Image (cartoon, rainbow, N blue to C red):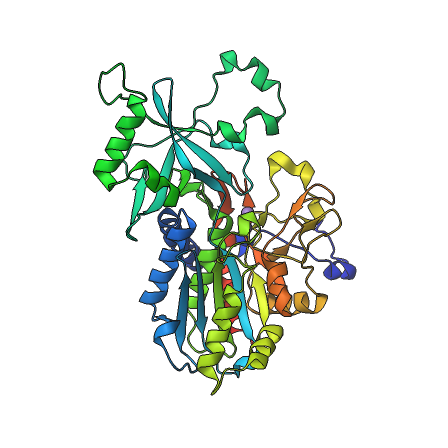
Length: 470
Ligand code: MN
Ligand code: MN
């Protein structure tokens, strides 16, 4: 006999897989959106490359550098590429700017290995590069895999050259070798956090000596330097004014027999970069001015002049005001910022069947259940969380429901299990309401992060609805 539905059951909050509501038409949108997303990921493996991709796409869609425009009006599209690492975009709305904007902030950087300023040495007839890791990595994950080198060298004369080795199929790759298990008895007995040291993350970069001369010191290092000099005009001192990032050499791939997921390096936070960017590119003249910012340095605390803790975003908003109002007004800027609504577009932890114990299942985000809104992050009692107000959650919940966008909520793990943060608390500094809203990820910060295609598409739809909200 069928279960007779008790009237009280209609009171329950139920979340279900967003895939149930994906018909054939929606499926083809989900698939084609993710095909473009994977191409974006392959072109945007560093914060610099991400900024370049954002700037290019914005340019193609009619965004002009803000410094080239004197006056802005509803429908104007402007951008600021800051130091090739952070980008801010705006589409001017119909409402007065001091009534606030709809702002989405994501980050362009991802955990990686940076080369040290003086990286090249020779040991046991192998040329090696020293690294200093960037952001929260589990060091053992970076061993025994193909790595690519992406970077820029700035020469004494002010010119620079971009270098990318390891991405083309006929390129060589690099690697950090792991210790053979046969001789790893002592290593295997160590704590995971201590088994691989930071100074142990050295990359193999060459093995042929420059020539046979017993008096010649470091002939393999010399051969590598010689090759770099021939190819790129580099001397050893040039490494000091360079930024080289070592990233996984593999491209984004579909994951699963049903190809329901995307696996890639750097989805934290380029999944939110891409979805919020695509959402903004769809907007013409919104009611409230739409602003998308793509900031750098989130993974190391949002510091530096390209990070959210700098005044860079505020300066961009001031430049907007100066071009919208007849005269620049500090008060108008403050009013604009304080009355704005914002989403901190960053990834959250998905419930992983292999590691269920770290999550509290009633309050965990699941892959395939839509974009996730997170009231608070932080750790040990919400410390350092933005902790969005119930009023703003109500507003966003209503917006997502109205637009039939699949969404869910979750915490970043069990109470006292650990925690984390986003740029939300730094956006809140200006007085605006901020809510964390992003895509759940499995294997966050690993060299191969996994996200569900339906969640990625629902993030895009959520960000677009937010930009258009009145
Ligand atoms: Mn992030
Ligand atoms: Mn992160």
